[in-house]
Image 1 (tube, helix red, strand yellow):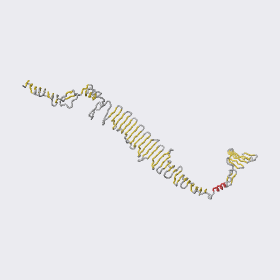
Image 2 (tube, one colour; image 1 turned 180 degrees about the vertical axis):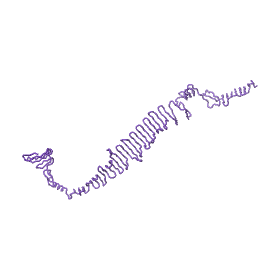
Image 3 (spheres, helix red, strand yellow; image 1 turned 120 degrees about the vertical axis):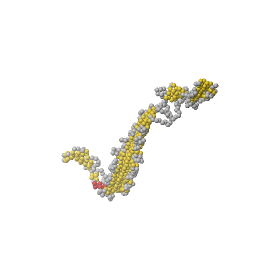
Image 4 (cartoon, one colour; image 1 turned 90 degrees about the vertical axis):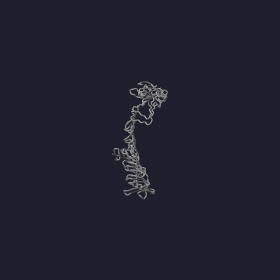
Length: 517
């Protein structure tokens, strides 16, 4: 506070840098300063705040005709001006022509109505607000916290609060619905009452997509799984899981898994019956049913057939092929050869192109009537020189029976000491002693000169030009033709007889020599 002795009065009231100061230098002035900033200035011309126009009059003019920036109208002047501008005889309506805004308030139920060209285009109450005519309009129901849009008397949209439902489109038919009351929050896009798409908000912030056809779910998708189709006895379903445990693709037909592709395993077939093809990281398995594996394959071992029963195995590690029957090996194929463990039946031709054919069994039989040796000989004759059969005699020299090309003969005997095999004529005579036919290289018996040996009759006879020249029996012997000149010995009578031209000429007996004449 400061005192001016010239005025004999106080000219300033202050506290800190805020003050009220009176200045009179010919034109009186009062300044108001707050925190060092001038906020008001009073002079004989009026007052002025820190910014804006200077006011020098409080006006009572109800017409506001001065249109001044220096005067402020009183409350009465403002009411007089407003009433004169609104006009009309109704104090609760603003109108012009057949358009107006009307306010009604009975104390507890206030209403504001809007009419354009005599058409009701809206109304506001404390609980409901409507914009639009009686057929197409937007309604805000504040009491129920919802907004509806109606077109052609049909409701086409509905918006509730965050804990209610929103809908765009009619209550039935094609529409979009967002339901915040459901758990989880869902959005449904309808193509019809039974055909619709659903988006559900998941607890982890993601979303789940579901599509329904005839009220049956045929598409499902969330952050880890996609399914297409229905899981019933008459439909098919495709399931793709792309994260988490069991990640992969599954196909179901009539409720049964027919294909499954997981991260490490793939399966094709009816899993309920076990008739499947399975591929894991290192192995492929084909099963006829749940207990019968008919194919199993790895990079080192492949088996075809019923496991542990009848199957074929291809062992890459040991370079072997094994055929098993009743889990017993029957055929073994390896780099050193092929082994057949039990009987072998060949219904077709058996061709062997190797250099050696070895048989270890004790008996070899064949129904073939001809065995061909040296088959496929390209030259004339046996170019190897010999072809035949050899008998292994153990520690003794082997025995051979073979054809010898240089001598054009079959030969038989020990190796290194073979002898030619003699042949005979096709129809030899009975009991005849064979003789060598040098021109035919064989033994013959047929001819006019021959010897017979009758074992049953204990006799030996010789014929020259069909004539019996001698006959030797156990007790009698004759030398010479029977009807010619001969000598005969009879052990039964101990007589030697001499004949000439069929007549006896002498005898020798124990009695002596006797002439017939």
